[in-house]
Length: 407
Image (tube, rainbow, N blue to C red; front, side, top):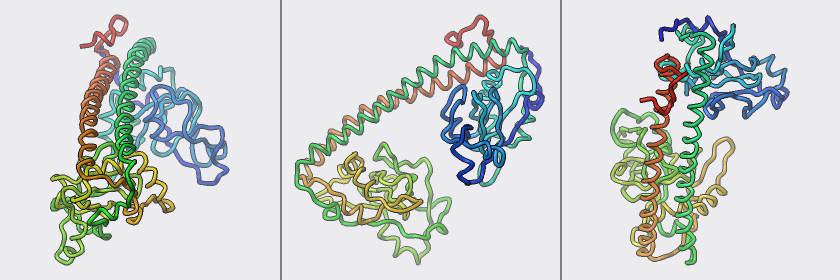
């Protein structure tokens, strides 16, 4: 349908967000205060948030917009939207669209959702991407009659509710599969736990971490620089979706020897949010170097299997032990003595390998099921996006069509 397009500012007033000072008198009030994180976790109306501010906080550092406004995240991740179900304030990562006339905010919320990729491409900035108020106000949007807006919004409310419900069920299945994996690791620990105990340090050839001050050696290529970002929470396989490289000058080579990775090394995060995460070094990272935020543990292969050690460290029991050993104020951190002092069952090498084979068989089945469900979620997301785009642009007649019939 050939509906007119108008700049967004013709229908909405764009309001910038703000943050009150840290004065305790500004916080823990009765007014919800939203961030992009809040928007990323809600679909539909935003009625509550993780934090609240007082009326003073709203006057001095933020702006309260009325219920029925559209809140949109304008800093990465750009393009998440929700309708304010109650009056609320919001931080600089969001902007509010306050209707200046009679509109159905649900329709325009769906329309903005269908334009998420285009909105993200307009983000500018060197430190972080941000969609400016000017770009948002100038955004061309379709403006069908009010009754048509309502019909489309009602249709999409019904159809997306079913898709979202199914996506939620599949996401829950993924959670249960991960719980099954963790149970498998814990069961291996329990079965091995009847043996005598010893400290990990007595079964290793090396426990170290990377040198400090290598930021100046980073390059576009060279040797892999293994960081905590390359650890996986739910797998021993290194995560190489974001790889850094270093080119070392001759004077750094001697110091670098101790932090050079070999296949079979166990790599453990020791600082920040990834503390305790573990990966097993394979050919993809062998020859690289660990950063100062990663501990390199080299098992004595005569008595300790690296893969078994990786699964042991990933078990709930050892993770709890490690988390209890953390120190630091604003930054969580583990020490190398913490790693050396991990208690492990002293069982024969062949028994370790047998337990590893059991875990890997179960893990293979779990990963196959997880892959299937992730594909289902991806298809549902594509379906949802196509349905919304077709409806808000008039490609389907919502008075006769059903989303299930959309080809």
